[in-house]
Image 1 (cartoon, rainbow, N blue to C red):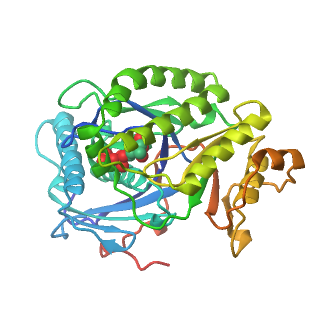
Image 2 (tube, helix red, strand yellow):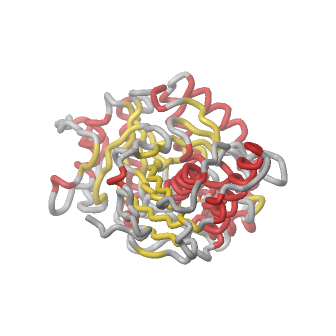
Length: 400
Ligand code: DP6
């Protein structure tokens, strides 16, 4: 690349993923190596995504990163680890290509701007999408074509699963250097078109313990976590993979709920205990079980990460009825028309029999809104230069 050239600029998007077999606990903090394998569903970027622009130029004097318009501390160890890894891969790539001089671009500083299309305050896992997007975008700008699990993982463990669409496993690996701790697609997004996802954004009073600190405390103090990693997860990974391959919703839903419950049990087994679920989360859990009991089968399944929001899996023939059940149990406060975002849902009248089985004391406003979405593809590069988040000067464009 000639030094007279304007900055090389690339913009990409990456998805949020939600684990159905949870990652909780590291065996190596520095390399971000997990104590168990995990498996996730990639959510569609039409509803939830991170967008990142990276630019390299000989005119930049330092690496700089902006997140949702605010400049981040470039010294953050995780950012540094991602930048170091991608430059290391780029160096390897270029030396295998022609064996001699390094491309000039490798000595250039990089500017990065990243935004999420969903409020970070909603408490949705944004770091996975953000670091996957960073890894993918940096790879494009530096011309790296290799496997990016390690780059994304060094930012945030769960981010390596956002590098692929559909159903994705993160194999824990065995090597101390982590080279075999990688994400792999189990099935593409087209595999199970009937599968639908509802994110129930729950009102929460205060910030929870972050995942990094939380899992560290669990590794140090929870014997249940060790048991889970050694004796439960390996068989569960195999079984849920079978359920996905066979599109067996009953099996998939039951394992998803059991794994979420076991993860939260390990949090309670941590000393001092960690609680991510709140009263609304627990009400949602019981609502799902009563709904399934009413139908005599597992039609809906929940999972919760390190916060009180519920992610619900169901099939397209059940979405409308279950959303009506949520509205009935958690009547929207204020602007009811903003209660549902994303894919359309039809209104349905609930039968008196179902209302009686649910036996709920309505709790107005406890679910703030629902994002209705589906399984989606992995990261993508955007062609349209108008979509770059950095201007020709390498600084963030003012928000439109
Ligand atoms: C509960 O990937 O956020 O969402 O590697 O420390 O950044 P770090 O943790 P992170 O943990 C995610 C935990 C989880 C479960 C999961 O996504 O598998």
